[in-house]
Image (cartoon, rainbow over all chains, first blue to last red; front, side):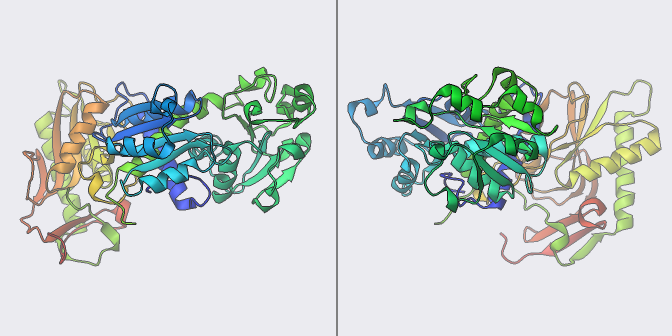
Length: 310
Length: 195
């Protein structure tokens, strides 16, 4: 694997290999006093975050450090980006400074793809840590890892992705990854929060949350992305919460084994009730923990092999 | 690092050890371990057998079985995967990780005997020593191998050797085990394109 830019087009074998690696890494590190592996010693990983993030950036940083890579964090504020340097120049600078891998989050959809093109010659790997409303592949991988832990194999499982699908790169990445792994995905959202060409996606669409609840193995709640919403997508937050929020009453109608996921940050009381978020049926902290192992696995698959000729 | 043994898919080479030889060799190694470590005696120090993934794992199990049979001592076994500690990761395609499973008591303050099928360059063992260092602090570490084929590239030697086999670098030694390959044998094979 040279870059990880999207889960669209990621084949099942590669995705499964990454998930298997993450699982072994987790097992290897479990209960160990020294949570450090020498595998990526001498490799340099730079995170470039042009958007706010806590868990993703921290998770990548810890992942890199636990694999013994040198990790450098660059944020848009406090770097030359503030002086008006373009994404391309910043990236080429980081590559010239010796980055083996650049992890980028950017508000523009497609930014990671452009970056990968610019950095191809330098031999630098690019990981998309979220680009606008496009994709967030490592989030989908950690969601899949969590679902595999809770449910076993994903083939034939039915997974509902609920809420602001339109603005969600997490939803896009999950739709592609989960369907590639053989799961059935149902999108549950008001028509205003679904993308224009959702009929071309390999999913079913529903506008009635309650009708889907009894038949799903997992519910993935999405954050309502107020920062990307300009205009009225729903009448009021209260009405949204009543129609599409994960309440305690809804939790009770889920099958016994079903699990609730949320990529965070959560808006408690909006898309998910506090009692649900803190219940053992929710896997939200497990998702965060798995995030580190999944990102370690991604770095392993990107950096720990011979040069690929392409 | 030494070419790992790819096992069952390979065509048959010259047989160095038959299934019977493998069983006798493991039994002899078990006796040697018992003698060196005083296993079964009242004042014996705790011993752990750690098989190196892949074929070291079943070998460690068999050794433990034989040791229990001959001395009555039950020796905990585990598996150590050394992939993350290899020094040649950037010279080959992405390797899948194997499982590491330490015995419930861990390795702290125990005599750890690493078990592998073939000792060649010694790089696998170096990696295993590094992996072991992260897993705990054994009282001492010893090495048991079914076949020592020479050509060491590091100052490493085995404490228990099933069979010494003089080989040339153009040859490959393949250990096959019931658990991983469906039968027991040690084969010697010529290769053309390997230095």
